[in-house]
Image (cartoon, rainbow, N blue to C red; front, side):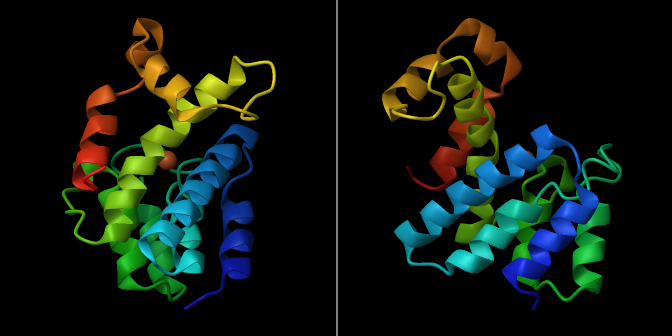
Length: 161
Ligand SMILES: [Fe+2]
């Protein structure tokens, strides 16, 4: 199984777009936090978060993403749990989210986008941003149009949070 440093190098090789990199780092950070909360392996959860969209820049269509990336990960020795979690974060893959890692990745992916969107319109970004402000923003019609509230709700429900 590759290390976090290997995963980071692979991620940088496949993803050059700054916004996509930032999204991956946000998902990685959220995965790390939940790994601590659930008593799971932080490095493995970080890797799943970091690499979940690794093929998106080169292969953004639903025919290829995240299948091409997962194939690459398999060739490089990333294990089944991580690969299944990455496949499962795309609803259309048909791969069920059975592990805590998979359920969490699905939940935090959309949520990371919302937190980032909220932070971008604040003078100090993430600094001092309260969870309540994010929840309030979820009810904002303009933001709601850009995100899938159902998706966000479903991810939280799967985690029973
Ligand atoms: Fe994502």
